[in-house]
Picture 1 (spheres, helix red, strand yellow):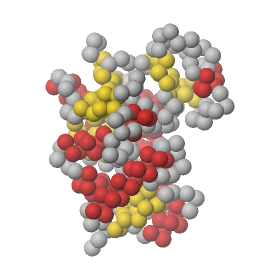
Picture 2: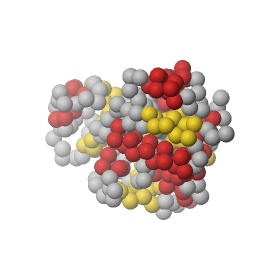
Picture 3: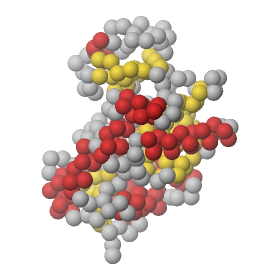
Picture 4: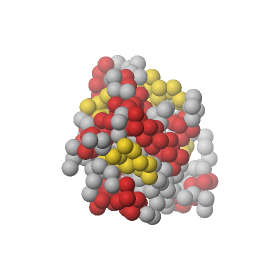
Length: 303
């Protein structure tokens, strides 16, 4: 019997355009894999549209607030059909960077030191000695992230302006120099370590999603012991927040101080042509069609 899959894509977040690309790619792969697919761009009538679609599985390809912070997961729990990726608690926890960091540190995972501060109180003066990083507490894809470097007079004016729409609280944390590494976890298995080599100063939104914005080296050319530490930390982070399905954990490795620090875990990794998790799955012998099928079937086993 052919399974019917509803793919959620788009949505109202700042990462809408990325989600549209991710969702379209996943829908195409699922169709090619023999599934019956209906694409749904969530809005106020989401529950009605899901009821009309009557899917066997809901494939969540949403990114950013609402789509990966526990809210749509709560609706899907109410809907009562299997859905992909992490559940309500893991999604909400992972999306709140500071609370997730507390959980990671309790699990023995090193994270950058920092604090949540009101954006307007830091707009005119440095909250810590540069270099440091300012980022929204509940955004992904490097939306609203700034690196404040030595010599900068103060944080960017955008932080305190009325144009800032990413929340009143921001996370301020130490900048850790070094190499950008990432590990996808599928189920309970780490796939590989990728080193990200952005063409810009750091791995920002453009570097993540624009063609040629960054180079991905998989497997990363790092010592075996660092590879092992990365993979173990990614699995530990996945388990610490109670994630399921596919996640991706991002790290900085400071070679001079031999420090591996977890920046964040992403419970809804990108599924675009330039995304990291599909590259790692392909490296391990699972092409994009097979990866999407695995994610869908993993969800169907939960109910």
